[in-house]
Image 1 (cartoon, rainbow, N blue to C red):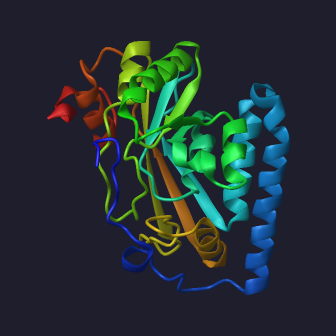
Image 2 (tube, one colour):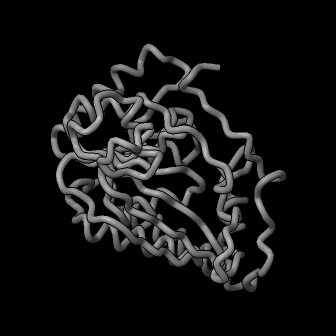
Length: 264
Protein backbone atom coordinates (compact mmCIF):
# COMPACT_ATOMS: atom_id res chain seq x y z
CA UNK A 1 0.00 0.00 0.00
CA UNK A 2 1.36 3.41 -0.97
CA UNK A 3 1.61 6.42 1.32
CA UNK A 4 -1.27 7.97 -0.61
CA UNK A 5 -3.58 5.02 0.05
CA UNK A 6 -4.43 5.53 3.73
CA UNK A 7 -7.14 3.38 5.24
CA UNK A 8 -8.91 3.73 8.55
CA UNK A 9 -9.49 0.78 10.90
CA UNK A 10 -13.02 2.09 11.52
CA UNK A 11 -15.85 -0.19 10.36
CA UNK A 12 -19.64 0.07 10.74
CA UNK A 13 -19.82 -2.98 13.01
CA UNK A 14 -16.93 -1.99 15.28
CA UNK A 15 -17.30 1.78 15.45
CA UNK A 16 -20.73 3.02 14.41
CA UNK A 17 -23.36 3.21 17.13
CA UNK A 18 -26.98 2.28 16.67
CA UNK A 19 -29.26 5.24 16.27
CA UNK A 20 -30.62 4.71 19.78
CA UNK A 21 -33.44 7.21 20.03
CA UNK A 22 -35.23 6.84 16.71
CA UNK A 23 -37.43 9.39 15.05
CA UNK A 24 -40.72 8.09 13.66
CA UNK A 25 -40.38 6.34 10.32
CA UNK A 26 -42.79 8.73 8.54
CA UNK A 27 -40.67 11.68 9.71
CA UNK A 28 -37.52 9.89 8.57
CA UNK A 29 -39.07 9.32 5.14
CA UNK A 30 -40.00 13.00 4.93
CA UNK A 31 -36.43 13.93 5.81
CA UNK A 32 -35.14 11.61 3.11
CA UNK A 33 -37.49 13.10 0.53
CA UNK A 34 -36.47 16.63 1.55
CA UNK A 35 -32.76 15.82 1.23
CA UNK A 36 -33.40 14.23 -2.18
CA UNK A 37 -35.37 17.27 -3.37
CA UNK A 38 -32.60 19.64 -2.28
CA UNK A 39 -29.94 17.52 -3.96
CA UNK A 40 -31.96 17.51 -7.18
CA UNK A 41 -32.26 21.29 -6.92
CA UNK A 42 -28.48 21.49 -6.54
CA UNK A 43 -28.02 19.23 -9.55
CA UNK A 44 -30.26 21.51 -11.58
CA UNK A 45 -27.94 24.42 -10.75
CA UNK A 46 -24.77 22.57 -11.83
CA UNK A 47 -24.83 23.88 -15.42
CA UNK A 48 -24.61 27.49 -14.21
CA UNK A 49 -21.69 26.59 -11.95
CA UNK A 50 -19.78 29.66 -10.80
CA UNK A 51 -22.76 31.90 -11.54
CA UNK A 52 -24.43 30.81 -8.29
CA UNK A 53 -23.71 33.33 -5.48
CA UNK A 54 -21.71 31.93 -2.56
CA UNK A 55 -24.43 33.03 -0.12
CA UNK A 56 -26.98 30.92 -1.98
CA UNK A 57 -24.66 27.88 -1.94
CA UNK A 58 -24.24 28.30 1.82
CA UNK A 59 -28.00 28.47 2.35
CA UNK A 60 -28.51 25.41 0.17
CA UNK A 61 -25.85 23.45 2.09
CA UNK A 62 -27.43 24.42 5.42
CA UNK A 63 -30.83 23.35 4.11
CA UNK A 64 -29.44 19.91 3.15
CA UNK A 65 -27.99 19.39 6.63
CA UNK A 66 -31.15 20.60 8.37
CA UNK A 67 -33.38 18.50 6.09
CA UNK A 68 -31.43 15.41 7.22
CA UNK A 69 -32.43 16.21 10.80
CA UNK A 70 -29.00 17.52 11.83
CA UNK A 71 -28.52 20.88 13.60
CA UNK A 72 -25.33 22.63 12.39
CA UNK A 73 -23.34 24.87 14.70
CA UNK A 74 -20.50 26.88 13.15
CA UNK A 75 -18.08 28.72 15.42
CA UNK A 76 -14.63 30.24 15.22
CA UNK A 77 -12.54 32.46 13.00
CA UNK A 78 -13.47 34.46 9.92
CA UNK A 79 -12.63 32.76 6.62
CA UNK A 80 -10.25 34.63 4.28
CA UNK A 81 -11.34 35.70 0.80
CA UNK A 82 -9.42 34.82 -2.35
CA UNK A 83 -7.44 31.65 -2.99
CA UNK A 84 -7.79 29.29 -0.03
CA UNK A 85 -7.05 25.65 0.78
CA UNK A 86 -9.86 24.47 3.05
CA UNK A 87 -8.93 21.32 5.05
CA UNK A 88 -10.91 19.26 7.55
CA UNK A 89 -11.08 15.89 9.27
CA UNK A 90 -13.40 13.44 7.52
CA UNK A 91 -16.20 11.49 9.20
CA UNK A 92 -19.35 11.56 7.10
CA UNK A 93 -20.92 12.49 3.77
CA UNK A 94 -22.41 15.37 5.77
CA UNK A 95 -18.91 16.90 5.97
CA UNK A 96 -19.23 18.14 2.38
CA UNK A 97 -22.27 20.41 2.84
CA UNK A 98 -20.88 21.47 6.22
CA UNK A 99 -17.69 22.69 4.54
CA UNK A 100 -19.78 24.46 1.90
CA UNK A 101 -21.46 26.36 4.75
CA UNK A 102 -18.02 27.62 5.81
CA UNK A 103 -17.02 28.53 2.24
CA UNK A 104 -18.12 27.01 -1.07
CA UNK A 105 -15.14 25.25 -2.68
CA UNK A 106 -14.01 22.87 -5.40
CA UNK A 107 -13.71 19.54 -3.57
CA UNK A 108 -10.90 17.01 -3.97
CA UNK A 109 -11.94 13.33 -3.97
CA UNK A 110 -10.54 9.91 -4.76
CA UNK A 111 -10.95 8.89 -8.37
CA UNK A 112 -13.01 5.82 -7.39
CA UNK A 113 -15.96 8.14 -6.78
CA UNK A 114 -15.98 9.01 -10.48
CA UNK A 115 -17.05 5.40 -11.16
CA UNK A 116 -19.96 5.43 -8.72
CA UNK A 117 -23.38 5.18 -10.39
CA UNK A 118 -25.19 8.54 -10.58
CA UNK A 119 -23.01 10.18 -7.90
CA UNK A 120 -19.81 9.87 -9.97
CA UNK A 121 -20.98 11.72 -13.08
CA UNK A 122 -22.71 14.33 -10.93
CA UNK A 123 -19.54 14.91 -8.91
CA UNK A 124 -17.56 15.35 -12.13
CA UNK A 125 -20.11 17.84 -13.48
CA UNK A 126 -19.99 19.69 -10.17
CA UNK A 127 -16.26 20.40 -10.56
CA UNK A 128 -14.86 17.79 -8.16
CA UNK A 129 -11.09 17.32 -8.57
CA UNK A 130 -10.21 13.63 -8.63
CA UNK A 131 -6.95 12.14 -7.29
CA UNK A 132 -5.84 8.73 -8.60
CA UNK A 133 -4.29 7.28 -5.47
CA UNK A 134 -3.13 4.14 -7.32
CA UNK A 135 -0.86 6.18 -9.62
CA UNK A 136 1.53 8.27 -7.57
CA UNK A 137 3.20 9.62 -10.71
CA UNK A 138 0.02 11.60 -11.48
CA UNK A 139 0.08 13.32 -8.09
CA UNK A 140 2.47 16.18 -9.01
CA UNK A 141 0.21 17.12 -11.93
CA UNK A 142 -2.84 17.13 -9.66
CA UNK A 143 -1.03 19.28 -7.09
CA UNK A 144 0.01 21.70 -9.85
CA UNK A 145 -3.59 21.91 -11.10
CA UNK A 146 -4.86 22.67 -7.59
CA UNK A 147 -2.14 25.32 -7.18
CA UNK A 148 -3.32 26.95 -10.39
CA UNK A 149 -6.89 27.10 -9.12
CA UNK A 150 -5.71 28.59 -5.84
CA UNK A 151 -3.69 31.25 -7.67
CA UNK A 152 -6.81 32.19 -9.62
CA UNK A 153 -8.60 33.00 -6.35
CA UNK A 154 -10.61 29.78 -6.01
CA UNK A 155 -11.21 27.88 -2.79
CA UNK A 156 -10.35 24.18 -2.86
CA UNK A 157 -11.63 21.80 -0.18
CA UNK A 158 -9.86 18.60 0.81
CA UNK A 159 -9.97 15.95 3.53
CA UNK A 160 -6.24 15.27 4.01
CA UNK A 161 -6.72 12.10 6.07
CA UNK A 162 -7.51 10.40 2.76
CA UNK A 163 -10.22 8.24 4.34
CA UNK A 164 -13.22 8.63 6.59
CA UNK A 165 -12.82 7.92 10.31
CA UNK A 166 -15.53 7.32 12.89
CA UNK A 167 -14.86 10.55 14.82
CA UNK A 168 -13.51 8.95 17.98
CA UNK A 169 -10.31 8.10 16.12
CA UNK A 170 -8.59 10.31 13.58
CA UNK A 171 -6.04 9.79 10.82
CA UNK A 172 -2.91 11.76 9.93
CA UNK A 173 -3.13 14.66 7.50
CA UNK A 174 -1.29 13.65 4.30
CA UNK A 175 1.18 16.25 3.11
CA UNK A 176 0.91 16.28 -0.68
CA UNK A 177 -2.02 18.67 -1.14
CA UNK A 178 -0.44 21.23 1.20
CA UNK A 179 2.29 21.73 -1.41
CA UNK A 180 -0.35 23.34 -3.63
CA UNK A 181 -0.99 26.03 -1.00
CA UNK A 182 2.77 26.63 -0.62
CA UNK A 183 3.26 26.89 -4.39
CA UNK A 184 0.29 29.24 -4.79
CA UNK A 185 1.13 31.36 -1.74
CA UNK A 186 -2.38 31.15 -0.27
CA UNK A 187 -3.68 30.56 3.27
CA UNK A 188 -4.71 27.18 4.61
CA UNK A 189 -8.00 27.18 6.52
CA UNK A 190 -8.28 24.29 9.03
CA UNK A 191 -11.78 23.20 10.05
CA UNK A 192 -12.68 20.72 12.77
CA UNK A 193 -15.87 18.65 12.48
CA UNK A 194 -17.49 16.80 15.37
CA UNK A 195 -20.89 15.13 15.74
CA UNK A 196 -22.75 14.85 19.01
CA UNK A 197 -26.23 14.34 20.40
CA UNK A 198 -28.33 17.16 21.81
CA UNK A 199 -27.38 16.06 25.34
CA UNK A 200 -23.72 16.73 24.58
CA UNK A 201 -22.38 13.19 24.08
CA UNK A 202 -20.20 12.52 21.03
CA UNK A 203 -21.72 10.08 18.56
CA UNK A 204 -20.51 8.01 15.61
CA UNK A 205 -24.00 7.64 14.07
CA UNK A 206 -23.23 9.93 11.09
CA UNK A 207 -19.94 8.14 10.28
CA UNK A 208 -19.60 6.70 6.78
CA UNK A 209 -16.72 4.24 7.17
CA UNK A 210 -15.33 0.95 5.92
CA UNK A 211 -17.73 -1.14 3.87
CA UNK A 212 -20.71 0.97 4.89
CA UNK A 213 -23.05 1.81 2.01
CA UNK A 214 -24.16 5.36 1.35
CA UNK A 215 -27.91 4.49 1.51
CA UNK A 216 -27.39 2.78 4.88
CA UNK A 217 -25.47 5.76 6.23
CA UNK A 218 -28.07 8.25 5.00
CA UNK A 219 -30.91 6.22 6.54
CA UNK A 220 -29.05 6.01 9.85
CA UNK A 221 -28.80 9.81 9.90
CA UNK A 222 -32.41 10.57 8.96
CA UNK A 223 -33.75 8.08 11.51
CA UNK A 224 -31.63 9.46 14.35
CA UNK A 225 -32.92 12.03 16.80
CA UNK A 226 -31.01 14.99 18.22
CA UNK A 227 -27.91 14.99 15.97
CA UNK A 228 -25.75 18.11 16.16
CA UNK A 229 -22.84 18.90 13.81
CA UNK A 230 -20.21 21.14 15.40
CA UNK A 231 -17.98 22.93 12.89
CA UNK A 232 -15.03 24.84 14.33
CA UNK A 233 -13.36 27.28 11.94
CA UNK A 234 -9.83 27.47 13.32
CA UNK A 235 -7.27 30.27 12.80
CA UNK A 236 -5.99 30.35 9.22
CA UNK A 237 -2.38 29.48 8.42
CA UNK A 238 -1.03 32.45 6.49
CA UNK A 239 1.44 32.16 3.59
CA UNK A 240 5.09 32.25 4.62
CA UNK A 241 4.56 30.98 8.17
CA UNK A 242 5.58 27.39 7.39
CA UNK A 243 8.59 26.43 5.32
CA UNK A 244 7.46 23.05 4.03
CA UNK A 245 4.38 20.92 3.53
CA UNK A 246 5.20 18.63 6.45
CA UNK A 247 5.09 21.42 9.03
CA UNK A 248 2.08 22.99 7.30
CA UNK A 249 0.13 19.72 7.47
CA UNK A 250 1.05 19.25 11.13
CA UNK A 251 -0.01 22.77 12.01
CA UNK A 252 -3.31 22.38 10.16
CA UNK A 253 -4.10 19.17 12.03
CA UNK A 254 -3.03 20.70 15.34
CA UNK A 255 -5.66 23.39 14.97
CA UNK A 256 -4.33 26.17 12.78
CA UNK A 257 -2.89 29.51 13.78
CA UNK A 258 0.54 30.87 13.01
CA UNK A 259 2.33 29.99 16.22
CA UNK A 260 5.58 28.21 15.42
CA UNK A 261 5.15 26.08 18.53
CA UNK A 262 2.44 24.14 16.74
CA UNK A 263 5.06 22.59 14.50
CA UNK A 264 6.70 20.71 17.36
